[in-house]
Image 1 (cartoon, helix red, strand yellow):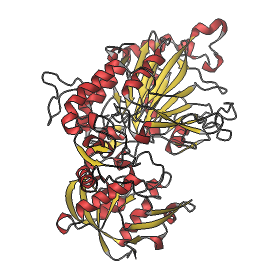
Image 2 (image 1 turned 90 degrees about the horizontal axis):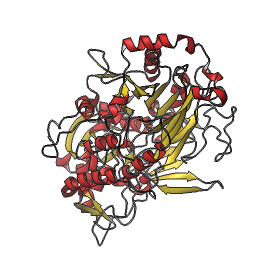
Image 3 (image 1 turned 135 degrees about the horizontal axis):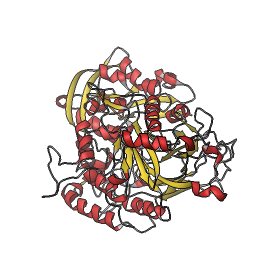
Image 4 (image 1 turned 90 degrees about the vertical axis):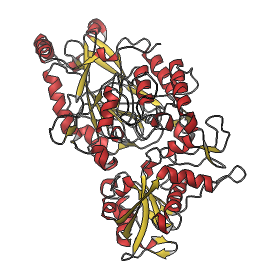
Length: 615
């Protein structure tokens, strides 16, 4: 199925005049209860099924992700679990195009982080390749996510509106970057001075008289997970208050069917993409009854958000946590409402059926059944989308001189992003690399290094991703692991501040979803998950090179600039003193791999035994 041209024509904001006419024309019809319509029988022509296809957290993964980052877990009927290879834009485009067949009313939406923290193929070119791919696969609308702000507001605006990069220029002679054909929505992001939204807060999808409003927001806590420069001059507002505000605006314009795209998410009780989070007891294949439709199998920030967003909103497409779920959570009126997320990296897509009532202009949602939503695997056994294969080849040719340079050798997969344990083998490698790059007296004099887990974006896979050979780590693969190119900082922290930082991993903003820092060799402690909050860090167990941590002593600590700025919920790190700025974290990693491995003596995965976890 060819890419659909000129997508902008199908989405527009209703003008005030048109809205008044539309509202006047439906006063009588709107009085009819949507819940009374079943979509079957003599009045079936009054309703139409709209297919909502959605995904989130693509992060520029045009090529299939490597290692465990490129798999999804599938729960089998017998209770066992199966790992399925998934993802890659060639397969995502093909999956979406196949899914649309036979659906005359189909809209495709995303919930943020399409770009940012991207592999080299996209990141090297400021994610222009990803925006081009999204245009081709027929994306209609997306919310912004926190990573859309990685390079600041000006760059986000350029991704929307087009134009060549202000420093790197145009990548193809005579070819200007045209920007996104789809609108980026940022309803809860306003200019600090003017109070006006940075980008469109909402948009309306229209097809043959069917109108569905989309409101897009990112998480209110975006400034806590993005560098200060990325969000400078911007204010981020409450998700629920913002969505409710614009739902009223759409409602006044006569748009009654509304979907919220929210870059905030939850944590299902199972990591299997096909886990039934509405019935957490039996698990796979459990019937979805009215009693089960409670979203009881999911926790995290999105649950509270979903319970408070106005009933005017008919479905929530979410993201940020990179988890897979298709739940129903009751809205404030008690009616079930779908809340979905399609994992990350284009490994899944969600297919949601919205039954649209032409008379009421609303989505049919009764107390018995919410719109159906199912997550599907973007499997790699299907044919590839030819236009995406050509796109990847074209950008790979430009990236090859940089991407294909060997920087090290490994003896087996070194798990990072795909590792579910608090301490990952790749986390150990990265923190050791950062310590080695900064321990010399003239390089900062670091005694230990801390690495935020969210900055580790992939695994290092043993299997070759190209023609370099198995076990060879290329610069492109190292870039995929550490794509932010954060500069290394070395700072003074007292033992007391260092202990507070460890406690902030599991308390405050990180209490519900701990962010366990990866630590360099020599730093050890016990993490007791049977306790709660800061007490999970066993104080007397914290040691550096075998010696107990001294609260009054000053230590030199290496960490990237994002973490040094208090990012990821570590405000104590902003109080550090005597800062030294060194090389980038990516340079530290590649130098370490080169120095500690060779074809005859590859680097083995570390044991990941620095943090003792009590469960």
